[in-house]
Length: 487
Image (cartoon, rainbow, N blue to C red; front, top):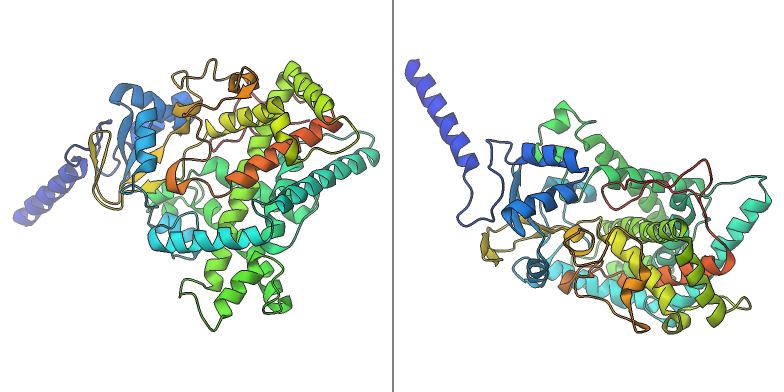
């Protein structure tokens, strides 16, 4: 009996010891505790600084620009130094995407979609998506027309709302998210939604809650899986699952509508083209399935409805808090366009200050975000350290664009002129809101176009200010949102 107890305790002690051992030449970081890793230190510093971004940045000051962590069972490397960020994002060895239940759960337990897949599958699907979306305007002059139409629809909605109410307060969350999503969704599914559509408002609300509570590097339940059974609410498991169930329901209804109304060979949008590819007698590959189509739509819906609209929110928050910047942008609009016509993308070269307002919004949003996690496809090197195969690697964009050490003068201030040199737009290498390398965001062209047209169009029509009883927020939420802004 005693021998069994001794063997059990010895085995447990050995297991504890092995769980605290770091791989050879792994990036430096806090000590690992058995089963907890460095989770306690991360949580403690996150409470002190407010965010994982700033917590990891503080740790990087102690341990160096390549920070090695372990949270629960997951090894995680956070890259903070500008040189190391570029090395990471250009590395083929670190070009994978994460694997595991947390990531697969969002797509029915399998690796699907475009955001969290890699290698040949990713290359094939990305190439097909870009090629087909161009047929419906992506990256072409037709895209400019589509964006201008949505900007006009937004202005009409604002006018109608004001005319039908004695007093109305707009929040940037509700004002921008649906029109900006429409610029993508019209190409993807042939559908546009009214900014006041209750279904879309509901979906936007649950997405905002998801992004502000759960990071792409994982959640409490993914680092400590037993918690999804013991504490499904507090660990984030219930929020994560319920949000995706609602999105799946919405997207499957869209798919069923397309299947019923689509005429083979006469595509109206990307979904129709993808259905043709699935049903083609010359089948492209087994990767083309209805499940994969819904997963692509899920990825693009989530990206299109949150990132760009939050960036526009940062722009208008900066314009509200800095009236002199708003006036200067409006003066440029009046000089170049006047009031007789609407702004178009063709005006962008002649309106550098408005373009710099958009750039500053991208910087301020990007500085409050982590990149989508990478995964080491094989044992790799980064900054002189060894990164074992399947380790998660994430870039801290705060260190690149928003921290006191980022190289930007007064980085917390909204200063569009920081990108102007002798009247010309100059963007530093550290400006990477869309990432870098082969995994650079595929929606960059649409996002930049949206920002310019919506900012120019709305500033041409209105002056923006806060409501007296609703001061602008001083805090931003993890995930790159400033919270509810009233306009």
